[in-house]
Image 1 (cartoon, rainbow, N blue to C red):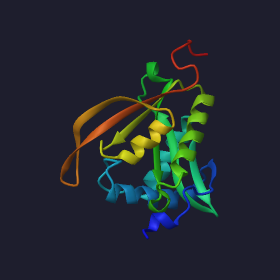
Image 2: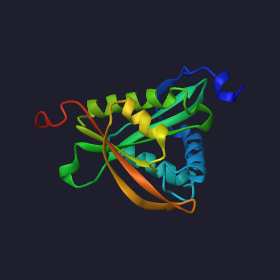
Image 3: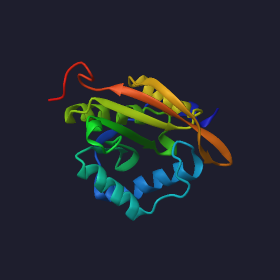
Image 4: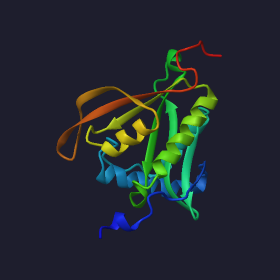
Amino acid sequence: MNDTASRPATLPVNIRDSRDDDLPRIQAIYAHHVLHGTGTFELEPPALEEMRRRRADVLGNGFAWLVAEQDGVVLGYAYANWFRTRPAYRFTVEDSIYIAPEAIGRGVGRRLLEALLARCAQRGCRQVLAVIGDSANTGSIALHAACGFRMAGMLRAVGWKFERWLDVVMMQYEAGDADRSPPA
């Protein structure tokens, strides 16, 4: 029997706002993805202080940085931040989501992303973009599709990591009234 067959399909998790004391675990989760995955195009894991700075930027811009935890252990995190900083983009954000390896495929990502999308809509965001590293990243693509994102395009061979060219998949989610009304 393989390891995933013996695990429950969905982990019961608590979704909450991140705290400063979550940062070491957040940094460890991200470092794993930097070193072993193609969902991020970073080549070296950022230090804890850099992750602290990034979180402060997200929170300073008024966006959510959420974590999923079980029994006090952070199993994943998600946040949104400006897609671009020019004023015309002010209703469009980009999401980021990373799950601890032991929690992948167990419903944690979906719970996190759904909570993040709700927070984006509450803040008045109209479009949420997923800029997904690697067109072979079927888990992230399926997660975003399951949460209502639609394909918006693909940028071919724009990243070089692990001695191969990587695509970027663009997906888009319409939040709130999207383009059906002017912003408030």
